[in-house]
Amino acid sequence: MALVVRVGRGGGARTLSLVATHFDGEGPRALRLQQLARVVAVAEAERAGPPERDVVVLGDLNLAPEESAPALEGAGFARAAVDGIDQIWIGARLRLVEAAAIPTRGASDHASLVRATIR
Image 1: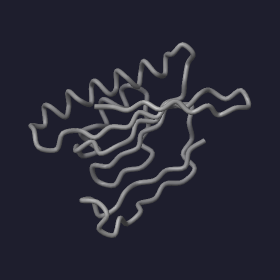
Image 2: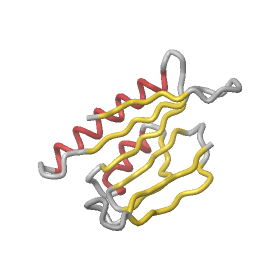
Image 3: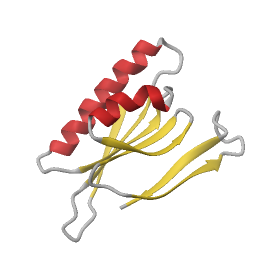
Image 4: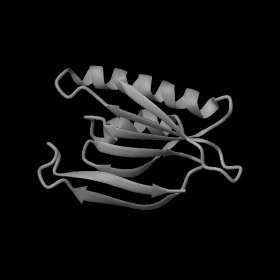
């Protein structure tokens, strides 16, 4: 359901936790909303630590951004990059530097993927 990767950033910066996911695309919308609630709980636990961490939630949510926004914004995340159902959300202590959609040229069932540079 979710893969958590912790990245040390050095220089006294908080560890960055990346919470990557891919929600079910076949089942009912209610299932994806349940999956979102669980991923938000994981992201909140990562942020709380110990020690406290900066968190990014990303993946194919199989939800429109306006469907995922209430739960993620309610948990303190801001939309960093969206390309349809592929989304990147960042914690409040992080800053978006740049975002872009990158064509997959047939390497995926998605026409493009999203990329974000954060600090």
